[in-house]
Amino acid sequence: MAVIEPMRKLQVDRTGLNVLANRKLVSDEYYYEFLASERALNSEIEYCFRSHRLEEGWSRSIFEQAIGFWKMNLMKNHAAAVEAQVAKKQ
Image (cartoon, rainbow, N blue to C red; front, side, top):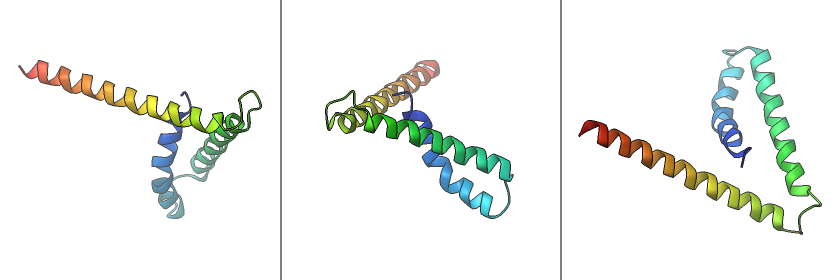
């Protein structure tokens, strides 16, 4: 589950960063660091998918389950934050 948040962030940032890079509004160094981070993360994910330690087909389902757990945890944390704000206002 450790790669899910960075993966989501890279996906969200990619489109905007491409626009900024095309307009030369971010440095080439920053843009290339972003691309390197994206390649490293993709390599890590690919390694998980190709892992011979898992039964065939498990890598896909495990990754999907990890995303589901991550989303559930994100929603739980958001609900707790909302409850805290409501309690604070009372």
